Image (cartoon, rainbow, N blue to C red):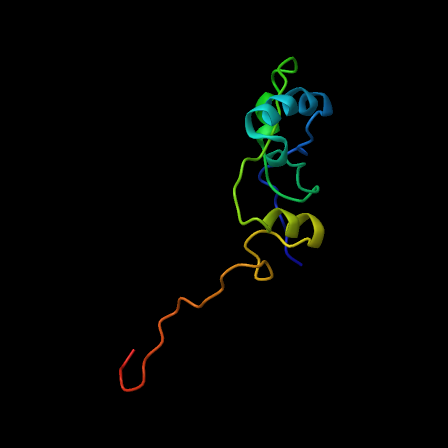
Length: 106
C-alpha cells in the first residue's frame, strides 16, 4: 500500500456573513443588482487566501470571485451542477482539429 506524506495544508475558506453584508451594497451600487450573484456552492478546492490574515485577527478579509462567461454559465452551474467549460454547457463546440482533405496529405 502506498504511503502519502502531507507537505502542506489549507484551512477552510469561509466568508464572514457580516463582511459579505458590509460589501454587498457597494457592489450592487457599482455593478447593478443583476450582476452581483450569490457564490457557488461549497466545493473541495485549494485556496489559501484566508491564511494570509491569520496573524492579524483584527483585520477582516473577504474572498470574492469576479468573472465573466456565457449567459448560461452561472445558471448551468447553479441549477444543473455543470461547471463552466464542461462538455455539457451550451457553447460552440466546432472541432478545431485539422483534417486532411481528399487527395491531400495531412
